[in-house]
Image (spheres, each protein chain N blue to C red):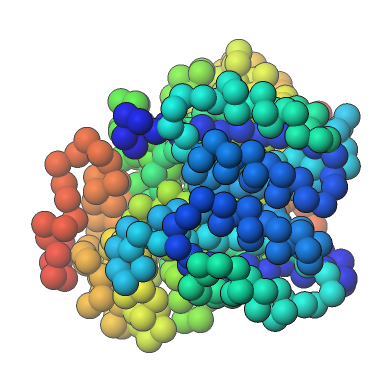
Length: 228
Length: 228
């Protein structure tokens, strides 16, 4: 984030008509605002039931959000525009933990306790987990981590992983996301950046320390299958 | 999800020029495709470095994704279009756990172990956590849960919460997300749908059982501050 651009988040409530997203995108293009994410849904309950809800986050230089908000409010059918802090400021960087349930839970315990110490000091680190079994399910989820917003590191917690999962590990590393694997059977550890035996110290603490902007640990200094 | 519409996910790699999102949204509008989410970023590394990466999920009826993909590929500057399963099929419904580190970790342990049992049977449930302290930080995060995609239930794990946090609990419940609170000091438990003492059984198991489409537990049957 340079000093020229700032991240913003807005929600818009509009009539549910075709082309609303296109009209909003046109306003954003006029401001050369860099949209990073848009979510759109139909409101199910309450006074705005049936209306469309758009939530989006964007980078904008020039410090013109008030004018942009005014122009958005002028788009036909727009009923409400609200500003929020972006998710990066609320939930921050994400440590993703995937694997067998009991081991994912142990890694999560380490990660959550370490993230607590960092978040108390003003950082923002989340710990997001999914327990999964099966080579295809795991490979699909590992690949999808590269598409998750704000995912910063992946920890694989299991006792036996290889095959398609190892290929997915290579792809997610190529996408810029480091991978820590618990020491386990199978080929996955050989593909990981770091192999760690103790789920608490290892996956949890090492992962969070890498993600933290303020810690001195950098996973890139211990590459090559270093084992702990 | 009705039998008429289906959820799809696509990624597009294009030249990084202004207006790409608008052009893509125009094609989607032509197909009356209901876009639910778009993510956009600049590719940092690799052969496509400097190009724009769009990932989006949409509902489309009429079973015309192949034609839609072909039309997207014809948008000027589009270099690649790839189809994926949507996040709902990979990461599924999300149990969100927020509060003090040690207690969030305990609730997560219960939730992850219960979610494991459900995911083994083909469901998809994730457990996403962030340890936070401070009334303003907690209220901000609780409110943001209503904006998180696929967030299905919120568990507040702490020893003392009230004030702005209780008001945020009311708002997130009004948005359709049930709230479970550990038994704790402060006014938050009085605003929660369920108050539970044991973090493992309670927050974890109750939360996941409610989210699961296949369990018989329904939090709406025990409303009114029922305590466990």
